[in-house]
Image 1 (cartoon, one colour):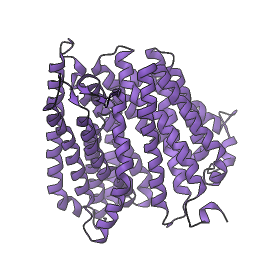
Image 2 (image 1 turned 60 degrees about the horizontal axis):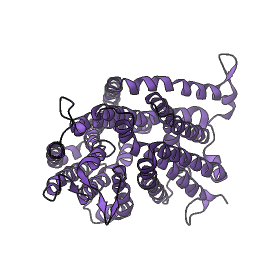
Image 3 (image 1 turned 120 degrees about the vertical axis):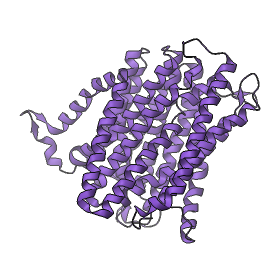
Image 4 (image 1 turned 180 degrees about the vertical axis):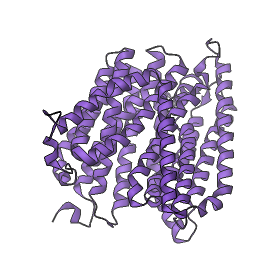
Length: 491
């Protein structure tokens, strides 16, 4: 009897993948947590430039899985994709240790391609562990999601602390070793899932491309050849915006054409899906200030002292994964109970309520300002801000992928999933632009602001973001009955 036939407990492969994903997230969030501060403090970029670089990097991180997932599906399989991705990510971290802007951008290129192969496909293996209709599937993904957030929590505490306290190069190195540790878990435990992660047509991997190069190696070589292009895009980050806009326009036109072919019901669902993708960009563009402006805010205008211990600015990013771990299971049970009594909010209503909570989080800075000492707000300001952002996330994030599978007919599932990831790429790019509005401690003429001016600027920008988010969320809640009709019965 195989693991997947055992209905008590979970397949052993789940726990192997849990550990591999946990350490991959340690690698990714460790680098991400240090990136903005590294750009500003070590490479001496202006705050606005560092935010745009960060936005372009994280946008491409979310775009890469769309392409790499399809390559794994059709050519190399999930196992080879994950191994290749892990090696590229570790290599990227170690290249950054060169300590120059060039080293950072080359490292980013390898990290983006590697993340595309790893992130897109390890989740696919998790799904393959369970047969169709297996009631353990949702629980399995919940366990896997906890692994993601444990990795993020370790990264934003241990990895970021080491980098800020002892030297950024040690933080990046630690992230790279974390990725190698994740790869080790994956390789040692692969016997528990390998049959679910093999190439779709193994014999085709050896077919020659250009008459001499096996197809498998051609995939690896072409993937590495993409890195210089990513290096160029991150250096010229405005091009990323044009790229995303072009791809998004093409995707919208394609979805509307497919909707028209499928009749009124499918057309209505495609229209709603496009609307929710736009709202997803709104939510995450505001949410993803965590790695940029909120971290610099923590560095310049937050009293990070807790009972005599001084948190680093990057450490403050740990609140989000901590609250996800604390509240994730509670929310999961809450949705089930609300469904049983017929009070589970509709998908549009959940989006509206999530955006309102995000806005309320930003308004916490107004309260924190009342308790500021020497123009530094207390640390609980960020704690409550991140708590409300996390509860807002739990209204939107878990239902996103489920919504895609419900809205899409079988021949469009992959396309809709790709467009959904594209909305995350767009949101991260927009987040980088929004972060520039805070000024990162500098005025319009580049002169460094005083502590008082800096705090006033952050409060002005964040409160504006808060009021705007609440307004959008309220409008969405009011419009949800009308939008719900476009679902045509989907809950």
